[in-house]
Amino acid sequence: MHHSVHAEQFLMANANAHGEPGIRCVAVSSVPCGHCRQFLQEIRGAAEIQILVTSDEDPAFRPLASLLPNPFGPPDLLHKDAPLLLEPHDNELGALEATGVAVGGGGSCNGIRGGGLERRLREAAEGAARSSHAPYSGCAAGFAVADGGGRVYPGSYVESAAYNPSLGPAQAAMVACLAAGGGREGGGWGIVAAALVEKETAAVSHEGTARIFLEAVAPGAHLKVYRFRPSAAV
Ligand SMILES: [Zn+2]
Image (cartoon, rainbow, N blue to C red; front, side, top):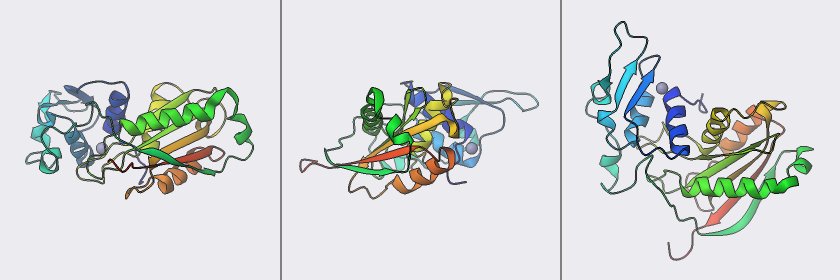
């Protein structure tokens, strides 16, 4: 259950991955759960996002504020000018200190060396970490998965001011894979390799949960973890 991705989170992660600058309206088949009402607070102007619940007897747009009065969100914890979800982020990662640990993989290790896939996975995960929304912990993180066709799908960590609704980078990468129609070749969702980029000293590390997640959806996949050491200037 910890690894669940709610429909509204899938939508936000997909919009984020495609550089959408904002969300004005959301249509959803059932009324958003409390988790999602909270997650949506990470978007600037969340109170005015118009929600259409298609299963309602008489569907009509209504502002998110009517579903979540007196919200707790980014304004309670962040400076008003801090970038929110869907706004540009350029997180400082520091220098790559250690090329991390390879986990699992077996025979698929050999397969990922061709075509520079290992390098492309690392670069995709690094880019996702730089653009991740992690203002509360400061622990930027990114993940990337590759399918059997050599296509690479990056995912950025997205934090919630309420912490628990946060969307992990591995989940965000799977959102990107599924939204692009990937993961249909081979077994285990077709994922053959993955990379995680995070800070070496991160208080919030995704390695453990990402490994559990990957072992469940793609047990043969090869995972490589890259840790960045914050530079002295940061
Ligand atoms: Zn939900």
